[in-house]
Image 1 (tube, rainbow, N blue to C red):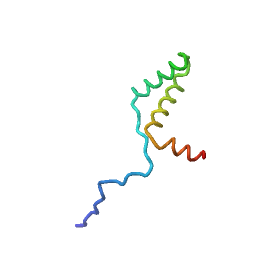
Image 2: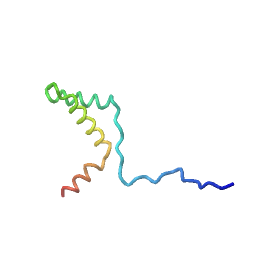
Image 3: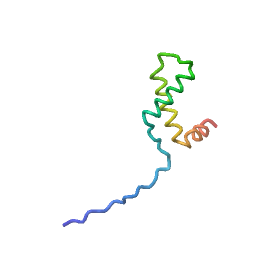
Image 4: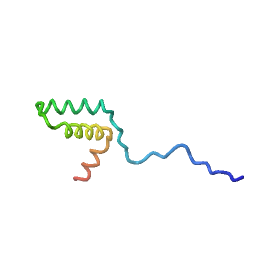
Length: 73
């Protein structure tokens, strides 16, 4: 009988942060806030949703803006 190699159960953390996935409720609340700021402009549902989603994902990556700033400099 062959012995199977054991793989480590703990994974080495990635050096780069990974974004967390916001819930639909969080995205909807942010999208509505964007809708309010736009003066209730209609016809931008999808773009408001995508902007809200991107903003929430970006906020979950604390170093993302720092890395972008370094790329600009």
